[in-house]
Length: 291
Image 1: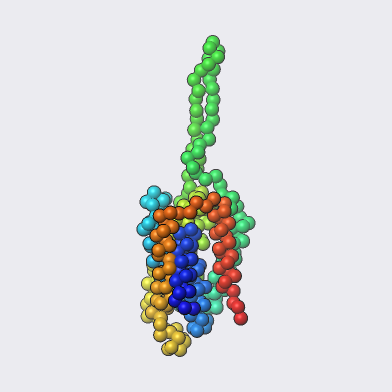
Image 2 (image 1 turned 90 degrees about the vertical axis):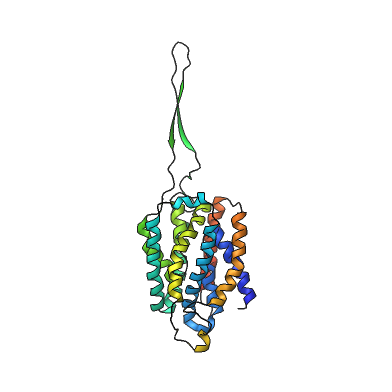
């Protein structure tokens, strides 16, 4: 796969970073598997490692340009972020030890299970009532028997606010995300959606959570590690990372992230949720072996 093709696909990773909070992982993994097909089964290890580096930059940049009022929803989530990072470090180490075919089939299986869960379990396509400053008002009128008029009393019961993600999910989410090279958005976006956030907010918050996962995974992947492949095949790698593929993907992604964060598209919430499921379906098909 040539550089121009990688840059073009990088444009797509920029779109998925902003619209779906993916940070590039779901797009980068199958692309790098194709680009480094010469590595054989080890291409999946390189893909997950390269994906982690791409996600660090994409998610970090997307977080930096996200409005502070949106990021305020993560206030008090320090323990969650630390556990995400710890789990990610364990997941990245596990990637080095696991058979390459296991990571690939686990990637496919997880996406398929996620799609089934989103379609069948309530809360994603049909979330609980979103908080939009609406209140339930019980109007009770007290009538003076002499004037047949009286003061009105309004009792307001505020709707439930979106719930934060529990810190306990941090370690397992981080480990699974880093092992598969997906950044965590496919785990955190549905969870935040079911906690009461709109798709726009859930996907925006996925970027700082992805950054917490991708950073330790990328650092571990950049460390000294030699694949059991020919010297020619691994000469272009730094640790397990393909820096050329990562640079081309980022060259396409970063301008798109900057533009879409300034002018986000207006997408109806339900269509947004269906689009999320559709993209997961495309990625699952793309990862299936072709020969």
